[in-house]
Length: 205
Ligand code: SAM
Image 1 (tube, helix red, strand yellow):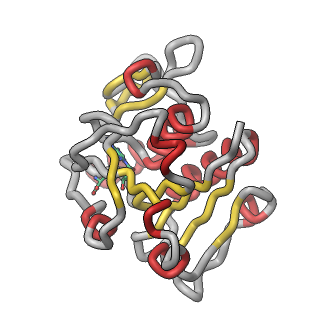
Image 2 (cartoon, helix red, strand yellow):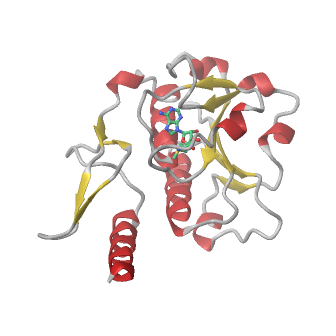
């Protein structure tokens, strides 16, 4: 297996707790599968969380992807929900690096990936449903490194997370599933979602 480079161009002004958990998950999985994970376009004052710094596959970058790949732009594929063509295992032979928007999912999607589309990289879609950034990286890796066709990746759409007998929330995204059919999420994400849901409820009271 040849490990690819996965670039997340950080587009939010700061690193929120959701993004941090997503980036840690990407770094760990990229490490296990012998790839590289670049978190690019970081503001100069950005403090890299310790949990990320300790993972050798992870590299923080202040430069943006245009500067990093100025001499080999054709080797970069932008994962773009609005691209005309879906990603295929053959794209693993054409491209060395896969670029993602470092944006939290939003419902309805605001198409902030357009900030990267404007830079002119070749785009590929991962099917019609919005994924979280770590899911999009996971699916891309399964397709271009493991050679699994996009429609053979096991998914669940809009899963309901049950916290207890009375509380649950529906996630407006598509996720890859594990062997038991449960959505794969970053470690600590379910707890964070529950905490945020409790907080919004408290704010209403
Ligand atoms: N609502 C978002 C937007 O404003 O574009 C989608 C952001 S998504 C949470 C983060 C990144 O994952 C996107 O920038 C894109 O690179 C990738 N992504 C997510 N779903 C995708 C899909 N269905 N096809 C291609 N890329 C996708």
